[in-house]
Image (tube, rainbow, N blue to C red):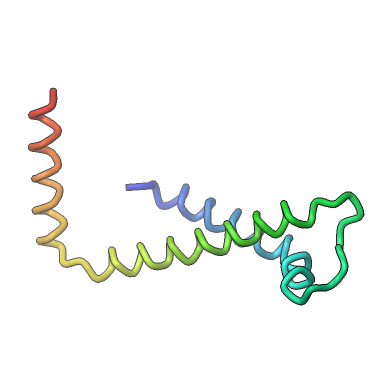
Length: 88
């Protein structure tokens, strides 16, 4: 499992990407003129879209994790360890 600190930092960085590129994403979604004079609006839009999608996916995974009973996690971990030991 990803260390909680690392996951927190990842989500913080992703939220920054969304916020930083929001103006460009809004302009592009509304078919307005380019915001950046150097033609990098598409790159910024892609970064916004990727960060937003990943934040939503992390939220989905966190919900799935919270909804999984403890016994199911233990069973899955034991199965994983057994498979891992067999491949050594």
